[in-house]
Length: 132
Length: 410
Ligand SMILES: [Zn+2]
Image 1: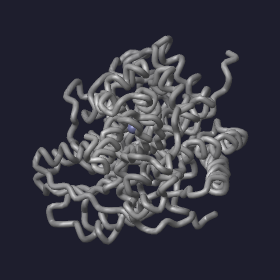
Image 2: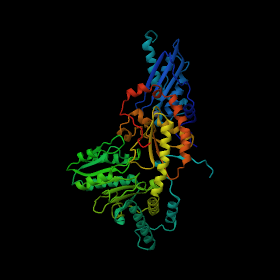
Image 3: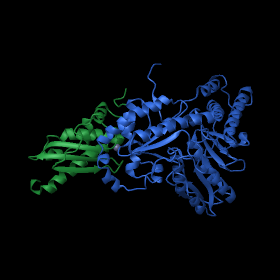
Image 4: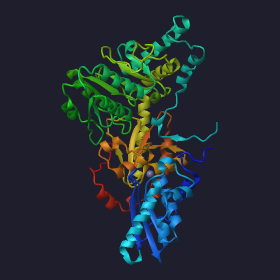
């Protein structure tokens, strides 16, 4: 049997797709970022609570395929509790690896999450110029 | 064989071969393995089987001289290639202009692009919001150079049936050849090459429960096409290659069954389709049916759900053993959105939520009920995490498009 299930997804991807972590909206977020995937049209919005240059809470909402939802969920797990610098360095490959891989054609879906994080950090620095 | 029965609403992707078809084919793999070109008895047997298949397929579409007008190919893609390239190259002295539509099957689109690279001019006429070609645009685009019009009998994504007899009147009057891609229509609704003035017709075997790997092409006597395969000159020189008798016999049997079963099958599948569409529009808010409300195939429905993406829905339903298809870019091999949904005016966000259903005579009422019991939960779960659903107003503003209408029929 291949490591991929019938939709070409690993068990980890399916698990995050079925039970995404950190879903929702933070009403009093310190930073909000959105990204759209120009390749297939998926969209993600991310909300951050930041304290002492650290992401203390994170929530996301995603409109997209299974890979986009699973990558969004995994990305929030990977950066929660991390410093802003560490979050900025999260790569799409790290997200895909943490999901035990994505089908090649779906690799671009993990970019959605890194770009949304990038946009949120940009939002934060623009509101708090002294902290960059 | 106690694997749990799956529920398939994606027969367009592949039909099972009808057991009667399978039975008819079987002897031609083993005992009756002759080559129609051989002069001895085994060859005669093959020749007769081939001619019988031509007659059955010809009868399905009203061909007057099936043994001279019906050709067998490797499938609808090859038939489209033979029709378009074969006609265009053979008749280029008469002109270099071809008219087609914006919602043709990808094979036709790519063949006409190929012809453009080879010196032909191609006009792709637009469709209305139901996916019906604009006849006036077709008329207006005809020039002295126009040699061929190629329009599909019905659209495979929307199920919309095109006004082919109107097109046929125009092309006949203007002495332009008419090629029709009948892949999803032949065997599902009555198609008559004489009544509709069709000169060349593409047909699929698998879409009528025949084997894959075989297709048909009707070429009206007097319509001249050049072959695209050079070889031993089989099939009156138009399609070289030793005839695939088992597949041909299977296609013939499938055509015979389709002709006989069409009225009942059509009533049956359209009943299931209507039940599903009605159920979805009732159970899922912000869902829409596309395609023409009445001029449509009995077995296809395209329903769009706003605020979520089709591949995610397909993935969820797969876990329940329910198979459907989507027009979402995320689910396509090329990540390109459906050109058909674009042509009827749907924006990117709307196209993302398009679900395609195709029914067969094997579906049961219980299949529809099962889908309707599962789908609302799937939609709710995905909408709960969708920013497009949550911030609907903002997104609707960003992507304003033509007003949405409920399906008039329901
Ligand atoms: Zn995607």
